[in-house]
Length: 191
Image (tube, rainbow, N blue to C red; front, side, top):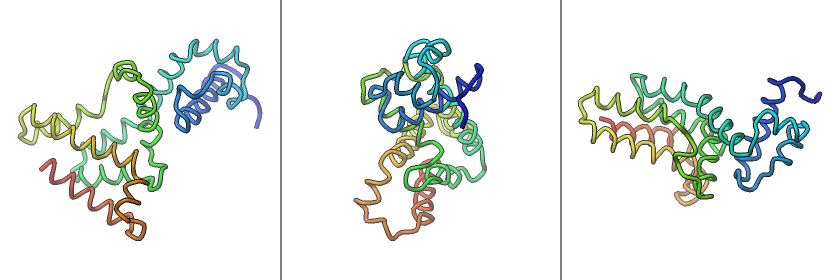
């Protein structure tokens, strides 16, 4: 593979390398030098295209939000939302769900003491579920609290799936059965 050249190639290579390392070890445990090496770019290019580590982390979070918000919003608008939501949350059984990088990076950063308002400036998915619940007859407060429980359940699964599988002895249970149980639980919450 050739070394990245040009603004777009360098930015893409750096973002992809940063995400791999940030998700695996947490942003606090990764240096810009390691990212430059992983991306096969000069450290000076990393600084030129991203400036500081904080700016690189922000760009990585923005990328993860943009990559994941569309499918989640589509799912929240689907007629069979509970099943679609469970499919997205469990689509990467054993650690490679599409949302996994976003959730892991968010968890690392929160554990490192980063304030939530420093991670994202907007939350495109959450308001869609609240809006849907309000359109189905919930008052705004109840809709927000229901959305909290739905997202807490989904985020918990995305972070702790291996632990939950072990603790609940789910090794022999087909993922389809787990997915159906989650869809049923989401359905009870939103109905």
